[in-house]
Amino acid sequence: MMAITRMQQLMVEDGAPLALFISDDERRASWEANPPRPIPAFSLKPRDEDAATAAFRAQVEEERRQKSRAQIVRMKNRFVSKAIDYTRMRWDQRRGKFVPDAIPAAKSAPAFLAPQNIAERLPKREPARAGADTKALEWERGIRKTYLPATAQRIVNRQAAAQEGWSRVKAHNARALAELNGVWDDKYTKLSGGLLVMTVTNRLKGLVKKGEAIRWA
Image 1 (cartoon, rainbow, N blue to C red):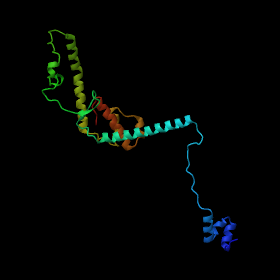
Image 2 (image 1 turned 180 degrees about the vertical axis):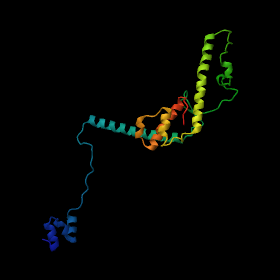
Image 3 (image 1 turned 60 degrees about the horizontal axis):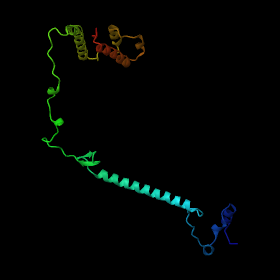
Image 4 (image 1 turned 30 degrees about the vertical axis):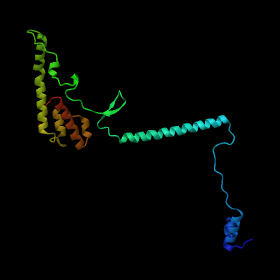
């Protein structure tokens, strides 16, 4: 029994191994008596397998190696293609590869690329005969007489409203302007000042889009 101190004895009683407190000579002797031994490498290959299983294993390994080589080749080709400048190249479908993009000379340009006057390719309009399509002409005159003045008036109203500006709509006169133009709704009383001004302004802009004039007073 080797000699240990009181503190080491208490540690041993608490569960510490006694080998921790051996002397250097005892540790050297234990090392020489039990030297470290190498552990054999772990192998996934089973010891007992038939010839068919071994051949199938070799086939799978060869396919894996070929797949790895193909991936490496594709990666190298991708790097090579990225390094090529294709700014002045075009893809030739007949050859299946990129070829220099040579601009043909003007004298050898095909006929369909030659500049042409578009007026020469349009069909010629026949002159109108006297008395032809009388009803259509009268209908067109009536449309112009009926709708063109109203359209012009709507444009004038829009321009006038744009010139006057919408800054005249304030929180204190928003309800009065809305009632004057017939766009007031009782539910607007729940809106705050800024939201009320925005709502009334949008309603007035809607009247302008319809071609109506805004009454400010």
